[in-house]
Image (cartoon, rainbow, N blue to C red; front, side, top):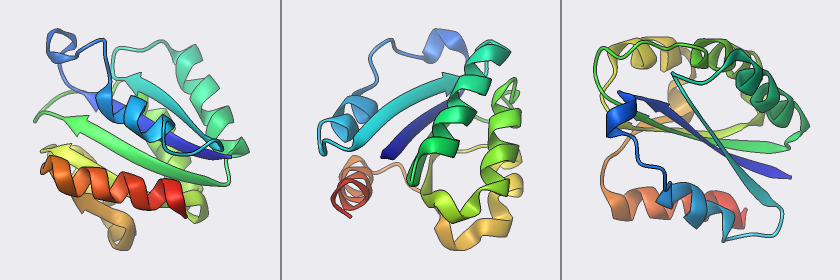
Length: 130
């Protein structure tokens, strides 16, 4: 199983209920599931997502962020992902967040900052089809 994980680090007022990238990724392959978490989520949600990461063979992390937003429970998940680097296919950051960029610097080869929708779509498609 492959996991497309969307992490949102922004004000809840800016977040939409619909997650078009999550829906897009999930539609590309039968063995791909999608999950999302934000910095306002409960700790039990982070634990559930960590279990999904542990069960997945490969993980694509899509982070939507605005500057200076707190990590909340996503920090626990991000730390777990850093310990599970072998499963990470790609981490794509859409937006800017200095804290996330510092945390993910050690895995620079798998970390990409991108906001162009066509390039994001291409990266997700590559993940789904590999």
